[in-house]
Length: 490
Ligand code: FRU
Image 1: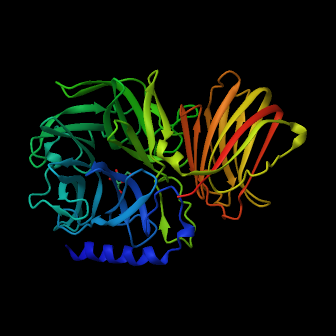
Image 2: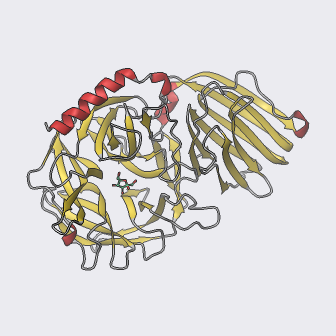
Image 3: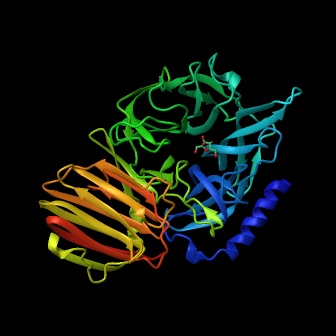
């Protein structure tokens, strides 16, 4: 083991003991210490699910990237595994960037972007991104002596030599495939598809898809998989232009549904759609479960808003893993069903009729900061309704629906965050027979909303002091609420 890796493992083990668990989320994966971004290497290995992530243990902002590591049997209870990769070689000394993993012949193969920075004789820096492999047993990983296994000279002529990253590896019959992001001669995103018989020697096969200057710049963190008879491509474009109420985050995650022409290595896609309309969601990755479900996890934070409180020694978390389905060409996302095993203390409030004169109504047994709550709201006689979360006299975050506009908004202006950061997001939401169904997952600082049985998701952070645990309901006109709330106890 290298000194770098040894140091990271020792440091995180020590900090895990020191940082109070009360400060951490209950059912969202958080790091033992330090900064995390993208999920990496989400994979099934020897009957357990492994999740690695971009990780800088020594501070709460981005630094030389390591791969942190946790594993789970049910996507809710995570177990810390020692840090898997550190930037400790000549070819990855600037960072072990994002990548993915696959099980093969009892081994766990990690494919990641190795970044180096070489000082040139003229004093300039040559920074390059290449792809490397590390093979392990679920705890310890050894980098191949022939790394890097793919360099940018394998890309079509004119492609950028600087941006080439985030390999997504998978295995089909006897062949490994990997799709990797880069930029074409016009500086626009493209995804190169490579194949290999042994995961060591790789051949360029095709450009799977190209951005054509349309959806942001670089397509970061691609994922590509079959689902319900189609193929789905997920990418996270940098610097994307907003359109109507969509793509406002600068860095967004989008998906395309289409078909895969395997012979020519081409993806034929439909329209771009937002994966999540909230303020904090990026770079998701999926895994196929033993029982055939496609499960996705995203980074529950954003490059565009840094909200972590100064006193925290950790920054960043992952969403609750979500089951994906395709319905009428749209991705349906719902929290993994395993979350329901951790529901406790059911409180049900049926047929709660509210009108404007009621103001903000609290309901017996409905409060808290760690919960799973479903609301069916009949809005036929309402012009709006609002759910007030994480509230006390000083703080509140609201989720409100405007019936005339048909829009749902999360607003965290009064959540206690820095005011120069993005405070609200809005999306169009259709009523179903005059009703809106809203599932609210609140886990201290994480707010994940699933609308109309997973047709849309909206995920945001709120770093409100934990004492603010009030929940209230209000409306204009008249609305009828059916509410079921559980505490989540892990
Ligand atoms: C996406 C990303 C990846 C890169 C990693 C570096 O969030 O920029 O493209 O591999 O983060 O941490």
